[in-house]
Image 1 (cartoon, rainbow, N blue to C red):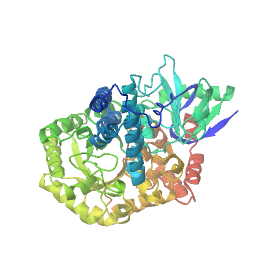
Image 2: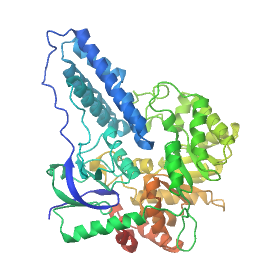
Image 3: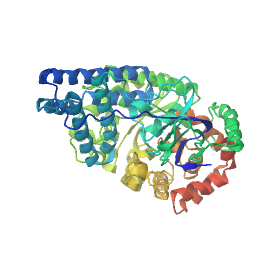
Image 4: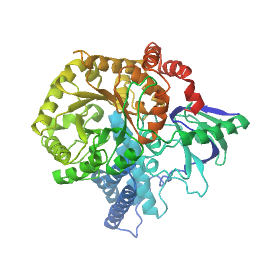
Length: 561
């Protein structure tokens, strides 16, 4: 049997046949010129019309999507009408290129520029190339690239998926997902978790498999087996039974000896919040307020924001709802707030830092949050992203105080915040570890790049050490201030045990992961969790840390996690 190994991002054991993503839109012939029967102005107008059509189609799909998928589609729709891209394409038409060739070359130039910037902006290169293909397909009058159409369920295999593709996966048809690129904290991985699709990323070579190949996928182990036998078929059948057991969370996160660990949900809007509440989430550990801002050319009004936030708060009366203020910049540029020409946006003006260059937006957002909280029974906490110093933490706390918000906190995603957590937590009431960004900043490894997947892993001992330091900083004055985790690490049942052992006080994740995490936590005592955390901390590598812990948690194999 032929085997492939990658990084498992969503557990599940599936036997099925694969379908490869269709070939990309072909490149127009090099040097293709404008037809003599078409004027430059007509060609330019066709490009503008095609870009508007693509934008409209993506916006329509965004309207039917929810949560993370909606935000991704809205951001991609905004890129489809990027004036810089269209202006460059029109310029090339005026120089004699055909519309298709002009768009192709303009997209290539924009993507190359983004790759050169590195970090988050390098990730946007994939989005630009996706938009380029969609505009060229529109100009040709052919279907845009996307998920294969099928009436029968299949396992989707691709080199990588554009955000617009990932956001529209239909779990009733797509049984599982495998990519040869990407990383464990890429947007593809995050949305796969949100959809509950068993998924593996960074599985080199799978793109060479032929359509119709029968495979066995183990999303927990990160392995793919071609032409599976009876043993793999039996494992998949057992998983099908187990999966139904792991679909219900009883709303009580705790260890076997009764140590309470609230299991919260990461949400992107009111619809997400309602579903999370129905899934048993004990509150919201991360409300991504970007859903109010993305896809807009202007800042939403305070009134618009109040209405949006109130919908989330009302879904959790009497429960904690942690609101993250706008995390704009890097991979989430906003025309009215961020500078797209920054040489390294991942290290630039993003998150809380935008208030330094565009004051007022944060103040108005805090006013909207406070107003929405006044009419709600939710216990509203507010945290700022990209806090690096104690001075920044104090500044954010002061802004919250002015609006009557009594529970200010910070995201710990910059390594400096973990290192000086004691000083920071003197100024605020809580911290929440954003393990996605913390990992890529600690390891200097872009979370979207498949070749760096082994580095960009929250099991890295260096990342675990910083989590331990953050907790230690919260305990310095004798009474621990809450330190939660709202990054994707919390959704890994084995890593969740380690996080509890490190002293984390709550875990927030996609609602689909609540039952699995809750089930595994309930099989270990707090002391056992601490011992497993020590085991992981002492490991020389992420792989060794994961293997050591998983070998002590037999429940994972039993449940197919």
